[in-house]
Length: 334
Image (cartoon, rainbow, N blue to C red):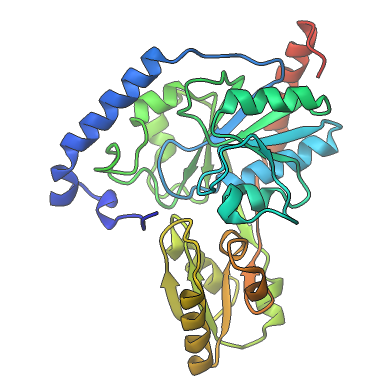
């Protein structure tokens, strides 16, 4: 796990030096996609993912979609690769017995009140879902670039405040696939936050655009009163988290950024605690980081809950339900 490199934001010397490796990445990806055999499954597969590495707000959108599908009378399930976890799966995630080291932080966080399965082989995991016999729609968390499981709908989530960086392929830039090729694979583009980099202009009508904003619940900040905060995060874009705390009224006296998906050691946590005592500050982190903490530390550290707010949710649900109805009309009971 690495921190998001600063050179991903501009076409400087380091990024340019890595272009040969980016070309190899592109070649390997094209070869894999050319050789891959795509498989369709009986249930609708709705994929929510990114064209770039780093956080975009995908997980809050998956959570919102799942909850609204339940409200609509559906019985969804979230399918994740389980990135960062040791288990290959298929594995039904149970927060009472599994840890982030087992199944990854995002699946563990999503599993709070939701059905989640992880599997590095998405087709086998999807078949495991079907064999269970109780779910009627699959929300595929990430996996836009997975060529093996057919997607009935693909939604690409973009961070409006970060854009697509320098637009170059990994490792020279943040892109998993070129912007144009990635757009061609999408049914919808979802821009999270202010469109500071004119993504909508770059998309130029090639796919429909939806917008939304990740909103923080400031209750925890209010409960902590005027106490100073030591904020830490091991996510794709930690600075965005620190700014969010300040926007909802928190006072940060120290902030620490760890690598994305960082698994905290006792040494890390002891140092954080020592710094918080020295500063007279309360420790606060993201929910995704909090879920990675050892259980004995969770009572000592607060997290800032976030949710996705979007006026497009009903439109998106309408398209998803139409896909479910279409599969049902072909003799598949969803």
